[in-house]
Amino acid sequence: MVFKTLMQIKEQNQNFQELIKQHKGILIKVARIYCQDEEDRQDLIQEIMIQIWKSLHKYNSKFKISTWLYRISINVAISFYRKNTVRKKNNVPFNEQISHIQNDDTNEKREQLNLLEQFISELKEFDKALMLLYLEEKSHSEIADILGISVGNVGTKVGRIKEKIKYRFSQLNKE
Image (tube, helix red, strand yellow):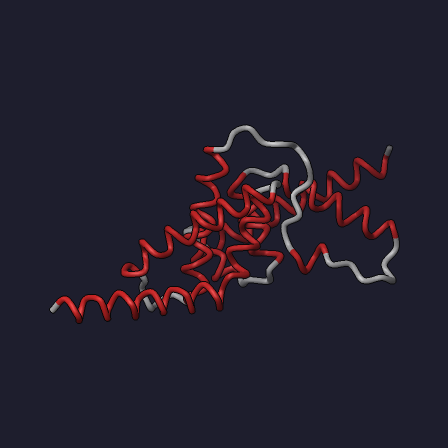
């Protein structure tokens, strides 16, 4: 009986390691949008992995594994962010793909990208998560599943956030 339990633990550990290896990008992206400091990012990633480990037995196969992982990661990140009230007000690079600028891009594009990152970093925790998923080109349905809101609410919130960001850019252009 004990041998079977040890084998089950070993198998669960292997499954967990494989899951993290395949989907570590999700954890990294979420940590980057919520943490400015590399040390905080590593702490957050560790906390997310702990919560995933604790929740493995609760996984519902009707959801895609990435949806389930985003949901856990974002919930942990929001809690982590709220607990860490002493934050620097620097830009938060939130997406490796967006911050990776090709050599032929102009300084103006880099500046606009930095401003976009700044504007998103200033959003409320929930809105940051929404924009992260939107910029990851998740469907409204996937975003709704991950964040636990209706599909219609996703569209409304994305539209409002985009309007806020457009307004911020227009204010800069007037100066």
